[in-house]
Length: 250
Image (tube, rainbow, N blue to C red; front, side, top):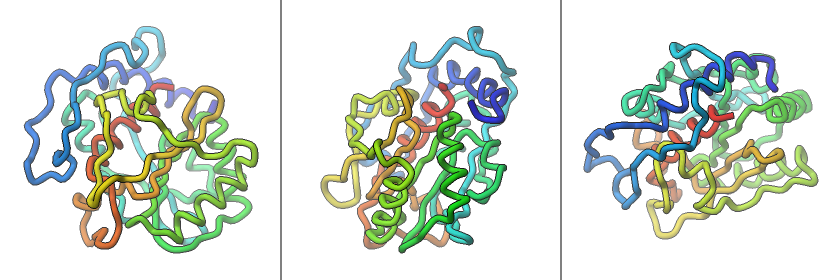
């Protein structure tokens, strides 16, 4: 368990209501996440009953946007999915990311870390140690190659191979639980043709790292960012809501 086990339990307590979404807002036809057919019905029975896990209903979910490799920041990843999760369910979120250094103990205050960027990078020894400890204690890492950056993809795979020598990233099939928490997502859609599958690393029976080589950044909901040359996944917002729900279910 993480240092903030009480916080994680409190957040888990909200997940029943999160998954039991009773009404979905009308889709904005201009929203790229709605350009492909994706089922949007909530699924009952996916998350534990709050009477069986501790915590108060007024807890606020906070998500960290990592600063890593010294000063490389996870910019150009939209936090709009936090707003969607709050508007369409009873999750209470901070509605904005919090910048957190991967090398610091503050990461243990957050159940979900966002890591993205472009270009090559190398993690420091303390960052690797801290990230591995965080994941083993129940944390979740959502990683995304900004604008489908091949250099960032290569660097991230190298870092994960270093951390998990005997536990390589594997393709996530669409029947994985992470695709069926709040939304029932059966397909990935992208800007140009068929997207590459999402990949993950599990610790025990729990998915701990989820990675998109094409990108789950949802840059249409960011300011000053444009994935002009990549093949970003266009239903990323729905997927990210599901990831948040999955994270809180443990």
